[in-house]
Image (cartoon, rainbow, N blue to C red; front, side, top):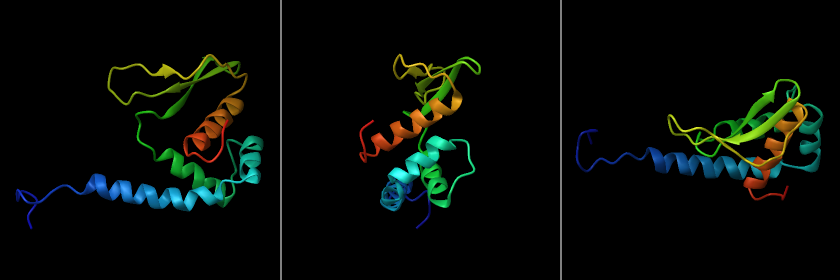
Length: 122
C-alpha cells in the first residue's frame, strides 16, 4: 500500500500510544522510595540506571502539559511552570510555591510527575 492511497491511514499516534503504555508498564515498578530518595539527594546526577530510565521516560513526554522551571531570581527563587505547547502562548504557573534552589524545584517536578503517573500523592 502506498502512502498516498486513501485507504492508508497514519498509524503513528496509535503506535506512540502503544509504545507509551508499554514504557509506562516498564517504568512504574522502578519507582520506589529508594529511587525517590536518590533523586532528592542528586537531582542533577549522576543517576543509577533505574533513575535514568524513569527520567528518560519523563523527558520524552509531549510539550503540552510538561513541567518546566523558571528562575525568578537566579540561584534564589524558582517556580514550576506548565508548558502550553502552543507557539506564542505563555506557560502558566503551577502554583504559588517558590523554591529556594534549582535542585529543590527539580525534585518537586520529579514528585509531581510521579503523582501524575498515579503512583503516589505529593
